[in-house]
Image (cartoon, rainbow, N blue to C red):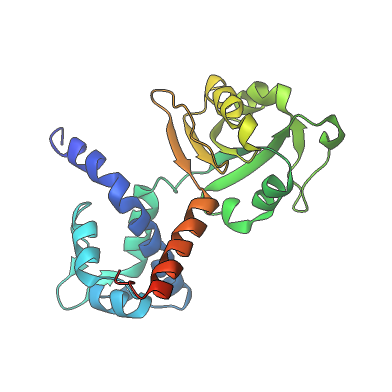
Length: 221
């Protein structure tokens, strides 16, 4: 077991995204009453790669039965456990502007193992208000207290770029070690803290690059 842990740690960053996709597929299959599925059927139905599916799942054990495939419910439960979604993780959103409010009301951020407990903002006019789904806005000054009392594990940065570094530091100082950043800025990282950034501008620029190559007649990727 001690020899396998480093291997799993090394590959987890590469496979986590695909495991999440597999989980969504299996959740759909379970919802329509399908009990088993082969890697080939999973790939064909959801436009995936069957060899990649088998390779990814083999890392975590043997789940398929030759000639039958995977048990949908069993594999789904295993992926939930592997991704740490078999328990609720409390989340706080720093920033109660348009983006923060939209994130708070997005169903995918407040279900399936995640619970948004509050939005934190520095604008006194927003204190005591709630998002449309009822998520309360608390003072940013009470961020540390809110995180401790509510056992928050994940922080979401939804503030303007100039405030992002300060917000990140405040979250980490309060004990957060997993941060999702929506601010389009490079964050100076702290040891032992996992940061995932979602930069919509970078994705748009990538699409612009693709379109430019199409226009130039050099698109080959």
